[in-house]
Image (tube, rainbow over all chains, first blue to last red; front, side, top):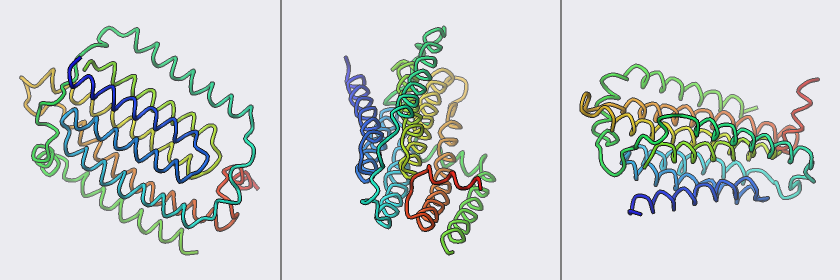
Length: 165
Length: 109
């Protein structure tokens, strides 16, 4: 087992365990912290595939900006008094059953495919570097990039309008 | 690494997100589970782009980079979505003093 496999399994275990802890933890603040750990594990996966740009953007945008926003909103609210009333057992069971069935069906479908063991390039390859992605982004995808700035502007206006009342 | 390991990892994370959305009632945690599902898809997309690159690098030196750009755009859209969604949750809290999504039943009336 090479270093790549060891890193892959470590990061995968970390990601799945943290995701499970995020779903089951009672306190929303702990959920946010576990989710940040999931994002770091996924960034580790990106680094393993040599997608350096996405690894950095994932940490900056997701773990940095979005989760801090979540933490701020949690701090603005006084959630101590209504820590989720007793959960409905039936809903809990039905939800876990539905998710488990989806997992089962998708994995079973995957095992039936012929080309399931095509290799993924790890550690080498330069398509994920900032230089390559920047060239393509500003040559071929310039219009979507500019449109996304309009999207950001409208989201900002929308957030202000909704939050102002 | 074979692609099916990455596919199974992504499916697992996605299903954990779905279970969270279906069972939790705190609106913020439901929202975080949606973020987890988006991230599972992003991970799968990067894995597929690297698989495509390994297959076609001889023909096209930048094969597969579109997948990573799509992940970048998904992150952009997710950031915009989070800002609006959290504003809506703050409004919900201001009106009902709770973030329990069962209170959204009253939108029916």
